[in-house]
Image (tube, rainbow, N blue to C red; front, side, top):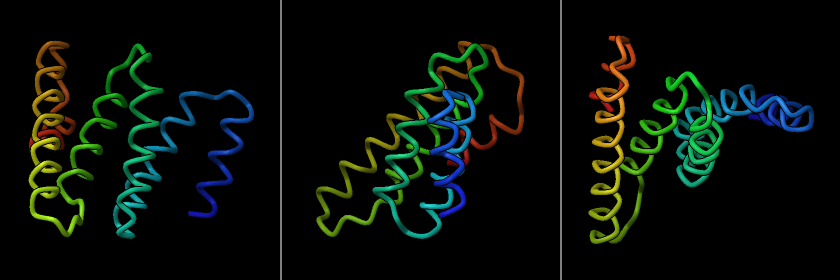
Length: 117
């Protein structure tokens, strides 16, 4: 995480938006596996925000399915909050699947990730 944060700060400082988005996607996964769901969602949201402007939609879709995964795995103690988080995850996953179809992408690896998450 510390190396990722240094690289992220360098990308931000030099205005390398695509690199920042890619690093945020990686930090999302790392935070997720460490159980830091709030931090993972923060990175996924930043990746989403940055990548929606990119011509190539792959990183944008990745950001969305990462957001969905974080919401699905969220560790709320309240059952109602868990249900809300899960339904939010499903909504995002459906949005990703629609976007994939609308863009007529042909990327089986990405499609698998969308439907598995």
